[in-house]
Image (tube, rainbow, N blue to C red; front, side, top):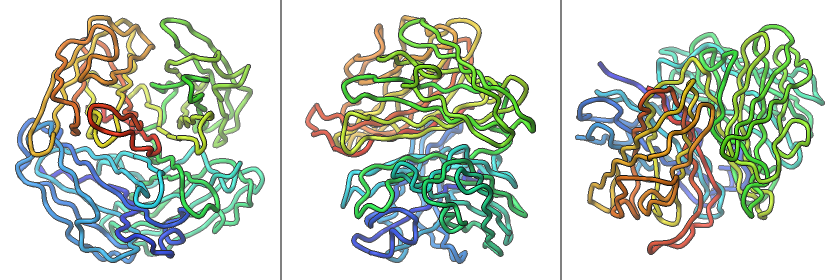
Length: 477
């Protein structure tokens, strides 16, 4: 069976210093480009993984094929190796003879330190409606830009409706968007006023998928970036899970906000149960939230947040129906601040196996931490199988731990080549140092959800990259 994955590569940008690039993509400055890490999540070797870039007018460009990709291993596609013109802003379609998962890395590393990651959308997960819980238009100096891809076989019409304060309801329509192509949706183009904060609903006459990038507003060069995917009906549930939340954590003052959108069809309250610092809990409940509106649980808020220094996870519950949520994380003590964003997971999608297409272990100054949340009823242990490349050499490790993760709580697997975290790691392999690749994570008896956090950490022959932090959601299997 041929498996297709829609990679919303909204920023397949090749050239440096193209002044038009920022305006076309909705992002500040120039130098934006993407890389795509595609993981074979099937049981057998993938004979071919093909990558095709699609311009906004529907023109396709073959960007190459990776062959003989082992089960669990990954292939990397760089837009610099693709014959697309300077200033290209478009989307992509990836196909394979095995099931695949993918991560898109967006950055301006040749001119700045901004970077973000988001997961590609499987062809089985597209829908005629996509929601985004968080919209900003020059709100506290930050703006969201949305990238909506036509996942149908023919042209579609797309309607984007913003609900913000100030601004009320503002709508922008895009007609006859070609198959596989995407449109760039900028809040100001739809009439959202400066300072607007709210949510976005996108509908179409055929299936679509979406991603959002949040950046600084009006700067010459982007210093940081947040990236996340859009939500479809399958992402909504009365109970959802967020593997990483914190307040004033580390000397970076890393603090999160959970932006929860009520998509139940009627007003409701929303409850968050925080689990943090080895077994402590805190339960908070929002005021009544109108259908379609959002409420923010900010980590540093005395009422709705966490104690200073807290690190943990969260369970979010709509008291009478479905919700969706996105988590923003920011290091307030640094300038520019490192920022990330990820989507929380519906309870209905949690499983005992998760794949992560991209990890880095002290690779060019970046290292990934894998945050695993146990969403079951009892404690569980997990096993992580790393399969990567170190130069031209394949490396692997099977890592497990002796201390079970309690129900509702999370554990961070970081610096596993050195046995750094969590305590009691077995299967440490120092050969993972300076490698990158994919991971398969398996729980022994409870469902789990996972995010991967990548930060600028040097060591072991590498210098800290200085690049913005970035993260993405694991793929439940």
